[in-house]
Image (cartoon, rainbow over all chains, first blue to last red):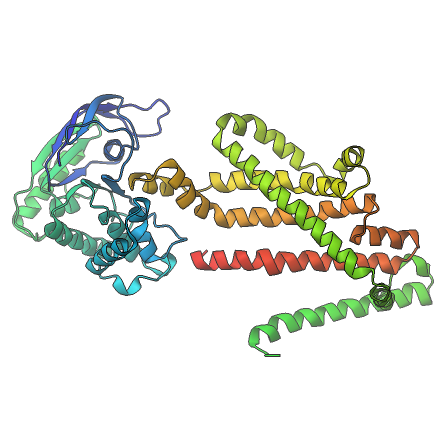
Length: 251
Length: 261
């Protein structure tokens, strides 16, 4: 898998989204890339462009050297809202993507159960969505996104609507899964801590120019510890970049 | 019969309340007609009179066929409305041009009381079954069209996005996402469509001479039998409630419960 963005810009005539200017980015196979930035910087637009939900105004996006037109199952998105379907139960939701692809029923069942087990949700397979807590819903959504074995998994602030404790637990689980499966992940977040915790590389998008301000490789052993000195250093450095100043301001 | 708590608390209190209403009605009748003579007996129905009328219509065997024919006609007209209405709604949903220009017109026509279609229907179909069914269709198809258009339009866009990024084509988006997602609102729309159809049916039936509840009502008027008129009105209400609760209500409750709404 290789994903390359060349001079990608996006403008909106009706101000329906945030602008992006001249993005150049390359994502390697198996890499965990986090995109941080204040609201309005265009980080969600970046995800929508890669997902194919929006088309770039100029520039090109190449997946394995090829342009694409519109969304597809090789670029699955996990959204901030769990967006599980309330008319389906847990297992049916997890199978949804495989059902679209008309995979054989036993394969659907096997794969779905594999990821439900990974999320420790196997005993909830027949539950209705409204019976689950917020964190469990997001885990079901993650299981659903993982089943398709997409080239790249796009995650749009998936844990930001959850309480701090739950979101910390989920990001630890996500890291574990990533270490196990080595999927390529592009993860959008406004939390610098989350980015430093998860990413191989952190892309900072500045709202001043709506473009990439800096790319920081996180050179830390996994699993990471948020009170580790180096972790705190990374966090401060990136926070300053995000806030667009070089002072000693702390969050 | 098994007596559970729900039955006792809800239905018993409702039945007692209804009995109270009937007793009050009888008192009102006795006072107004028999004692004070404010109304003539032929202009005011009484519970006893309605009951007698019920017995009479059962005895001469005209009530059951009337109910049967009305239901059959109503159902047939309603089914046509559902098909025509949902196709119209779907078309308005698929083509922005139609949504912009046709929808306001459909909204307007929907507000038209169904009885306004009676002159047309009689001119086109004569005093026939078809004329009644035409009024029923005109009375409910437009409301079903608007409701189904709304139901589809109100599906959260995120559902569609999820399906698209998981590889759904547009047919799958409709079948696997938009249809099930809009189902609760669709059911409410169909329920409302039924109540419009049932009302329109009566407008149609009183105009023609086909066997049916509307005709039994008019016969009551022609015979100056106010009790028969009242009886038919009560039957119409009961059938309306029955279908609303026993069919649509059940489906609605099931769907809502399943989705935790």
